[in-house]
Length: 80
Image 1 (cartoon, rainbow, N blue to C red):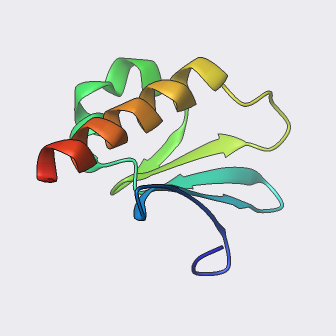
Image 2 (image 1 turned 120 degrees about the horizontal axis):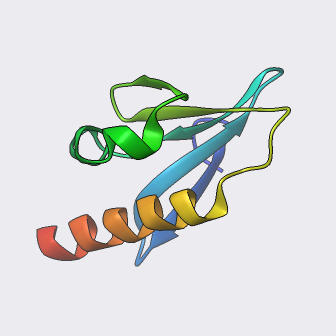
């Protein structure tokens, strides 16, 4: 837990945060570059700087979330 929400870490480095709210599941720290690069895949979701909101009444898009986490792993590894 960090900031009162769930955080996924690798080697102590935060990758993404998940928060469940009444109307959505928020995925935070996705990265603005990921959002910009994958705009077509993210169409239909509410977006802001590094945040993606998945509707609470729909299944979580597991493949998309996996892709986001893998992209964050690559960013963290590149940064060293």
